[in-house]
Image (cartoon, rainbow, N blue to C red; front, top):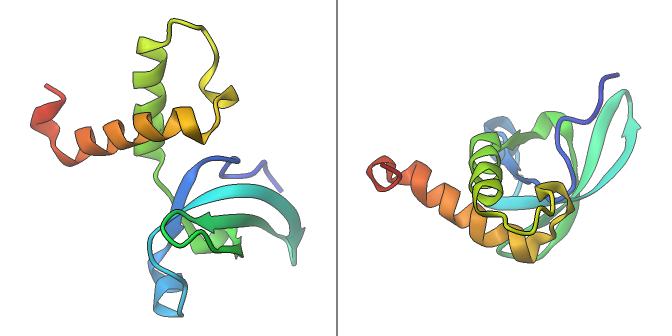
Length: 111
């Protein structure tokens, strides 16, 4: 089994098949990595809107890697403290994630 696909603090959402089977909509944050069950990684996730926590299998999730990657690049370009992105908590990450999402939603804004 390879390393985990997602890391703590990353924003994910349920993949389409999981949503069709009753998974809650909206974005979720990875709170904790859990031990694998039946050969599949599991994560403790928390809904950003609802605040409710649940366990999800890796196959049920889709990551927002483009948003996370752009947010990290924006943060690092403006980071005067030299504190790595991975060591920042959600208070610092959230504005950068919002900015990245805005730029990806409005491509002419980033030009």
